[in-house]
Image (cartoon, rainbow, N blue to C red; front, top):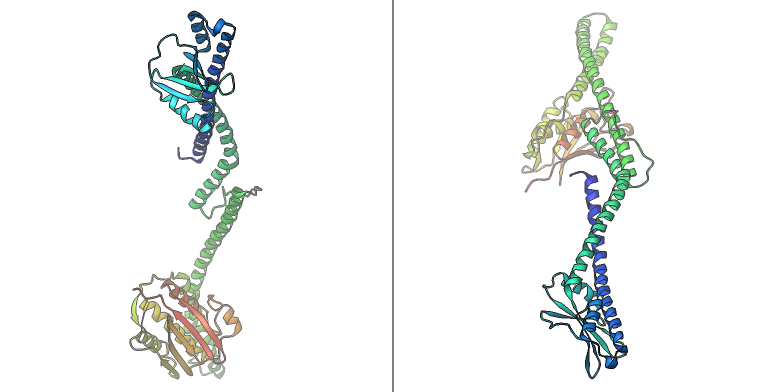
Length: 451
């Protein structure tokens, strides 16, 4: 009952029956007019038989026989000055009468009168007027309406039966065509979507591309392309997850190995050999960079961006706390906080602190421990400006890509990537406004305040 094929079949049958009904209405009206015209013609022929009779008079027995053969109750002819009863009724006519003028009745009137015939009371008679034998004369006949009603009813049942046969035949043919051209292809597409939803990364039972160029063909081809792209993406993600797990294990072992090497370097630092004394600092720096890189890689690979708890915070106080933490190793850096004491914004306090501390720390490292950092309020957030040498072109191209954007030899390039993820998790963003020899400016956009 809920399938597309059943609905199409039912709608086809209904549409054909509706068309048949629209055809039946004028057909029934034509049947009525033909029936009345036949009675009028029979009455004319009966009237002609009177021409051979003396004084146009016949016996009562012959008159009744002529009326019976013509299937009428009475025949009269009306002229401008008189009314002549050609064939009088065999008995008095009692009952309701309805006048029908075939000379003035159009198609719309015939259709209305046809429906009126089906609702006519029992025993009603029709007074039918038509063109007479001579110009200006009107032939008037009286006929019972019951035979016309019976004929219309039988005609309606015949048309109904024929309509059902036509509708079922046509509906079946149209259904089979639609089943082959529309329903089956749509079922394949629908089944593929359902299977794809259950197993997006699977290779099997995907929809195949088609050579059709209509809407269904384009939809099927688009679905095939989408399934292929998403399946490849899922497989790539699975491989990356496996690779990340392997890298995490390697990093863990590497950190332990580097920690052991660092202990050994501490022991070497006690040596009096001048060559060892010169090599140890370089070794310690190399080991420290390697340990930091391993730690940051593990941190980035394990962390899903925590859910933000956005609330109103005091921006000036928050950036001051972040600056104190970030600039502890850089006493030569000056901070110019231009945010007002009452400045507030919507943000997650922890996210804001981590982002601000990372941007301030990056600026201090870029200026090599000497320079000025300005914290400038904006309509939607805060600008972090420094007086450093600016970012090189390569760093700008991969600014927010992990492991690719650092401008320092010992940097991992994870800080900005993590910071932007945190900003976006709050509904804000982090972007580079400008950079050059005069300094660099990053803008931290915050979500709009709720009314």
